[in-house]
Length: 243
Image (cartoon, rainbow, N blue to C red; front, side, top):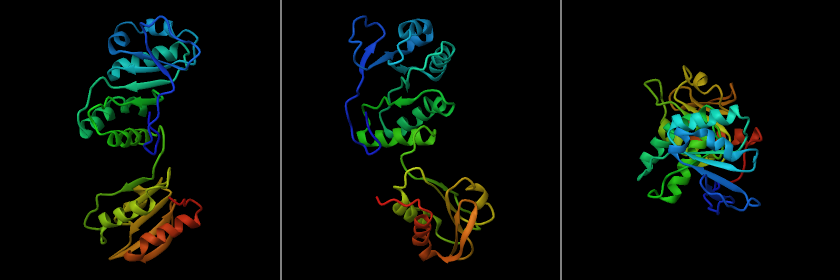
């Protein structure tokens, strides 16, 4: 189990399989359920859980099977923590991200499940942790870092948006839960970042306008000064934290 800083610790639960009959009921338990049982007889799982609300569930299956299990749990009124796991083993970070975005990422987006377990024995540990927490943030399950909204830029962008975004990430990437928009122009930028806490928007050749929420609060700032002025605006708003 990993925390948001990448520190690993032992899982507090004793992992048991549904076929296990004898286990220590005084210890936290996590019931590991495989794909075949989920898809063929989810009723047995419900019977095994009974009224034991302390037992967490590690469900390993395709998206359809996981939805079926979640539906049975909901109909039975079970509130046990449900950890979702794809049965597909990934051997590189790209496949790990793609596979888990599809499953269980799509279920987490629909409010199904309380967490995810990555099938990533062949992927670098630190990369797997970053991918896992990135998926949790993308599905709004757990916020662990700054969220950036950036446009791809077009002919209306009259400043170096890629370099600006890089500098803003370096200065503000530790502000957990904050949402910052970096937009190329004032034509579409304010609308595209309407739910951002702060915004950095191009306003002409080498000029930037800074936003707090939907309000433009500093206009016509030279590009070379704008990143530090954004940091100062975040400080003034009470949202700055030292890293």
